[in-house]
Amino acid sequence: MKPAESRPRSLSLPLSRPRSLSRSCLAAVTVLTALLALGTPVTAAGGSVDASGHRRHCDSSPLPDRGPARDILRIAERAKADMDLKSVILRVTIDGREVVTTALGESMTGVPATPAMHFRNGNIAISYMGTALLRLVDQGKVDLDDPVARWLPDLPQAEEITLRMLAASTTGLVDYVPTPGFGQAVTANPFRQWTARELVAISTGMERWYEPGTNWSYSHANFVLLGAALEKITGTRLDVLLQRLVMGPLGLRETRNSFTPEIPEPALHAFTADRGTYEESTFWNPSWTTAPGAVQTTDICDLASSAGGIGSGRLLSRASHRELLNPGTVGRGHPTSKCPATVCIANTEATHYGMGLLVLGDWVAQHPLFFGYSASQAYLPSKRLAIAVSTTNGPSAGDGHYAHLIAQRIAASLAPNHPIPDFG
Image 1 (cartoon, one colour):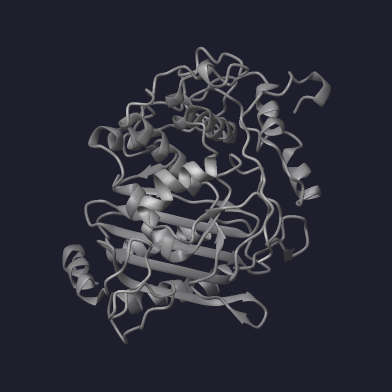
Image 2 (tube, one colour):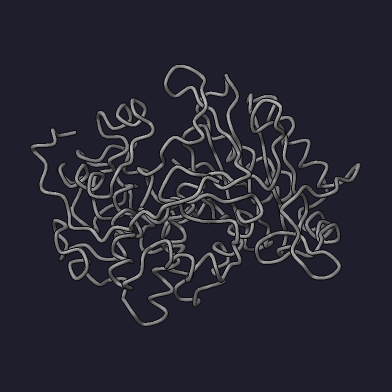
């Protein structure tokens, strides 16, 4: 990272403003068909529905003595023990109908984890930004190939960077997260409130990995800028816009932004050894993770609904859904002298990055990992199968992506002909 005095002046970004907040093993087809018979009706938000049609709290489902739901529970129990996880919360649905919802372990000592607990959803929110952008395209308000200079004139090479490049991460902007010193700065003061200007300045203060549009590499800076562009395009604060265009229409009632490290009650507490000592990290500040206005928390019922709603393209035209899954990233990701293989990861037709989400074989997915939390949302369109998993770390858990590993094992059990590959 270059010293602060050598960086260009900060971009004039349209930032969201903080508000004051109160505290507060059969064949796959046979198995999947059988699972539908186990399901109970659910609302768009994922909660089950009582006899009067009212949505109940997100809670654990009754567990049968045998069958797919019991198999999923055994997978979770084994993973929790083998991986030393403090908690595992999961929900699996088919065509929106519940297969199983459960929570294992503890939030804190003596406090059992429950499905209703809220946790950080990290980069899952960028799939909402990608969907919001495409909804604006469907409404005729923007074109994906519009240069961002119209909305972000202070961004270097803004005339050469398009909305598509921001959403698909093909701008060439350095990712500020792995830059020298950034991780140390976060862990040295995990309660620091990072601003969008600070984060983007780190990336724009370094030489680009490649010219805009010529390659692919994940960069958090792209999504900070995309959030700023969406605010400028619509004249609407990002948290309000995402609620209006994505979370509201999908019925995600427990998914929300916060401008502080607050997590709504009931909160799933997290712990990590990132600083050398196993300690609580629940309220470490996630402001560096993405655009202000898209730093969100959710619950497991919303996460399962999100997997299906985003993965199926329910809110988009067919053309925009195709763009969501492949905005021109297939075939990109070639390492160069400036962009090593650990950064410019090859995107193939089978496994690649879309517009704020991952296409992993036959699955549409996303899986955040930070501050002792991991989560995974995965959707298999051909079977309308949604898997949502959230985990927190035990003292010796390490830094593995445990939610993704559990999702992979559940997929192998329910849809053995459709494995979830690794990515990156």
